[in-house]
Image 1 (cartoon, rainbow, N blue to C red):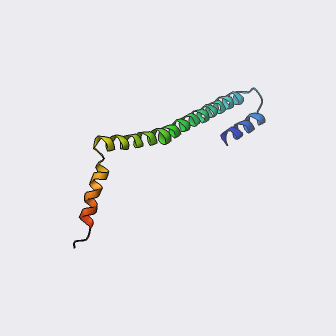
Image 2: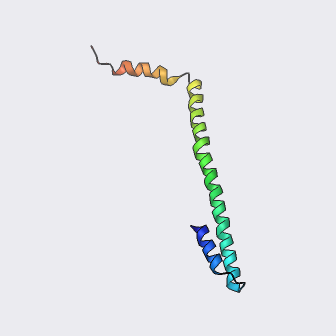
Image 3: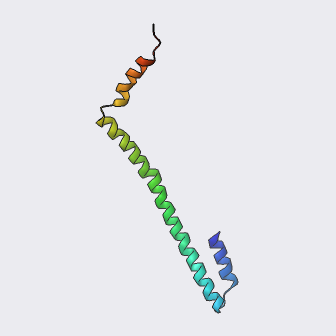
Length: 86
């Protein structure tokens, strides 16, 4: 939307007056900011999707091995604890 607006304004105002120079500066800043925003969004997607998934799964595997599969060994005692008394 910003790019379309910038092209429209640039096409409608083609003179070399003082206002044209101001518009060139403003539109250049908008285009730079749009490019910067796109770079930040791509970096955020990589960090929050792939890297975070890798770190969470890796941490889970690390602690499972380091704590000698505490999830499985504790599950047996949990089942025994909740079985109805006879």
